[in-house]
Length: 339
Length: 290
Ligand SMILES: Nc1ncnc2c1ncn2[C@@H]1O[C@H](COP(=O)(O)OP(=O)(O)O)[C@@H](O)[C@H]1O
Ligand SMILES: [Mg+2]
Image (cartoon, rainbow over all chains, first blue to last red; front, side, top):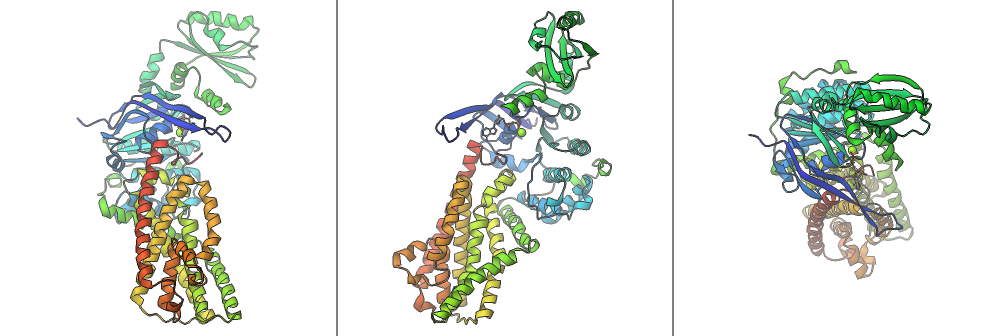
């Protein structure tokens, strides 16, 4: 049996952060990853889903031999990333969203050719492949455009060609659709799936903080928050786990100080989350029994809160995240920006 | 936009290509990384002004002074040669040393590290590209200077001249490669240092006059900059009065240059390995957005 494409065992990474000028000697430690154990089979399209600062990029850096683990071990294509980078590197490639790699004064083809040479590809064949791939991703008419003249979306397609071009066994994509518009994102997702399905020996790990992307694209998803993997399974299994809960979304008038905790404390209420909106609030409920809805509504009306709409909700990956983490990705990111 | 994206069907597009490893990969990497430097100057024509006209101004200033004080005519040639070599010095100081730092900011450094090539090949490529691109400027300066100021060359040995030039370049760019890693480690502080270093080094390296004019130990100290001895040796080999104005014998200068080559290249390799290790341990040198 072939080894796992990617495996981590009790993987952890601690960053030492130097204090600012005043407290130069104060050293803080930040656990960007703790106790991460994931196993990814050959042929999988695996997604790491989590808010900004969850530790996704840190994990990718470790797996691509750019960063040493603080604890635990990691293997890519069967090789230890720390001790055997010389075996890992020829087998991988990496593309990050929003990256501005290469040289702006080179053309798209020249930039890609340069990178192909760093992998030892024969020059002429590499050039042929680059042209073919550029046509495939819809950049056929930009082959001789300076890469500095490309739009974000086109540039990202060029970067993805750079990743595909070197026949990696394992490809790492860090937020591949970051900053792209809807159309370009869809194109990129399409390309990713196409590349993976083209050969069952290929493996792809991508990170994202877009729920839809993880749900639509990935065979399996690990939900990661504050450096810990909270759940890891196929999107459908993850959603099925929630199926016992009954979900409601209630739009209300402003909350008059009512807290999510107060609602969660009601009997048979599994979780409750509140999102402030322009003209009121959105209350998301996971109930053990449908009958638990009554007391919730009573609690609202007691506080003179008007119910504007009530929806029974179909499960999405977003709900899985909310259940595991206690709040939505959007809220997590708002929180981390405030820090 | 999405309409021109088709599902991959053509098998050959993704069929794995054979790849070379070892020294062939090294060579490919060197050439590929030299490429943007060479092509860059062809696309950015503004260098003509800064890299040729400005050194020519400095050369002219010295030429007028030398003529005014009726210095030996060969001094004019010295200044022209110095002007040409200044181009290499500026290239090393400003394009080589800051390059890795810039590559880090750009996000290229991480990609260079994860590729199966060696970082040393990347640095060598940068050096080679920079050197070849600058050679064009140097030739232009010598050509212009020779015509404008009527310089007469008396080359005693082309072979020795070639050896001295190659050694100077190897040592100089070796130093540049070492500085590139150093800059990456020190980042901003190093920037100020090289700003500070630029002018004094012009002076003590004897770009525009023979270093023999300095006390021995100052000249010897300045010899750590490979161009000092390289320039002195080249002048001895191409001007009639060169040997008389030389610092020490060409033979000795060649030996010292040889030592400098080894020291700088080995130093570059060691620093580069250290830099890569540190980057991987601390996780800060591949960080592009902070
Ligand atoms: N080089 C670094 N030094 C110190 N802290 C870092 C460094 N890189 C990332 N971090 C911190 O580690 C945490 C995880 O970051 P990251 O892996 O980039 O998350 P993500 O990619 O999921 O947004 C964040 O809190 C971030 O601020
Ligand atoms: Mg990230």
